[in-house]
Image (cartoon, rainbow, N blue to C red; front, side):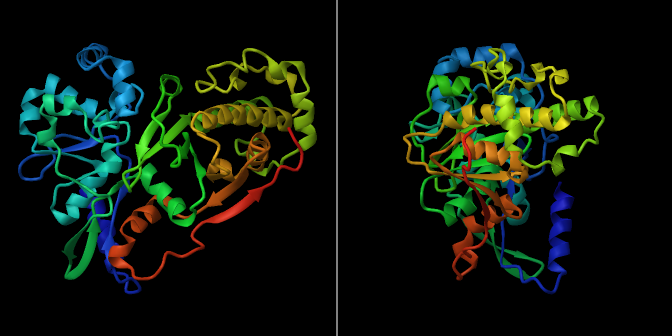
Length: 410
C-alpha cells in the first residue's frame, strides 16, 4: 500500500503539465491501520468481511446497554467487524500484547495522509460512520471508548477540511487528512445544489443518502439496515442501503443462462412500457412472497419461475420491477419530512433506462435524475480542501444530469 501511494505520486509529479498544489485522500473507512511508536504498521490490514466472534459481541453489548440502546446512540446497526471500533475491542481482548504496542489506530484514509505528512490525525467522517465509536446525541466519543482505553489509541480529531503544509520532492503543497469515501462522494452534490435532495449511490450496494434528514434513527430504521453517516461539515446524514447491485448480477446471470443469452444482454435493452403494463397486471405480481415486509434482504425475484416469462426481455423487466420496489422501500425509510424533491442516481443503475424510468414512476412527486461524474470520491476529497489551494470558484458543470420524467404511471 505504501509503495503504491508513492509510486502514484512520483508518476504525477513527473508529468510536466501538472503543478501539484494540494493532496487529499478518500478510501473506505471500515478498517484500521495499527501503528507502533515509530509509525510502522504492526499487523496486516484486517478484512472487515470476516465474521465477528458471537461471544465477544454478546459480552460487549451486554456491558454497554444492549444492542438496541447502543445502536441508537451510535447510529449504526450491529454489523460485526464492519463496526471498526469492534476490531480494536477484539484486539484488546484477544491479543492484549498487540494492543499494548499500538501507539495510534488510523482509519485507512488517515493512514494514507500520514504517509505524506508524518502527522497523526482523526477525521470525523471516518469516526462517525458505523464504527460504534461515536455517540451521536452527545456529539463525542461513546463512553465505552474511554472506559476501554481506546481514546489513547486515537489521534486528535480535526475538521475534515484541515490541511497540513508539507513538501514533496521540493514542492510545497497542502495535504488534507483524508475522508471516508461515501462522505466524500456526497461533497460535489452538496457544493452544487442547495435545495434538499437524496443521493442514491448505486453499485454492489445501493445507498440512499439524505443529508437533509437530521432526525435520530428509530428502532424500525435500524432493523431495516439504516444508519447515519457524518458529513465533512460534521452534520449527520441519514442513510439506508440494499444489496441490489449484487442481486442484479446474480439474477441477470440466471436469466442469461435460462434464455441462452450473453451475460451482458441487459446493456442493450430499452424501457418497454407495454411489457411493464403486462407484467404488473398479472396475478403473481402481488404475490405475498414478493411483497414481503423484509424487502431489504431480497427483492423476491429469486423466487420467481423463469418459465413464466416468454422472453429474456420480459424476465429482465420483472427483475427491474422487483429491484426498484425494493429500492423504493429502502429510500422511503430515510425520506424525512417531505422537503426532498429531487433524487440523484449515480453509479451503474443510473445508466439503466429501465431502472431509471421505473424509479421516476415510483416517485411521481419528485424530479429524478441520472447523475454522472468522473471520480466522485476523488473530486469530493479535492473540494473538501478547495479553499486551501484554489482561489477560483467551484465549476458549475462538475455533474452531468439526465432528467427522467413520469410520462405514464406504472
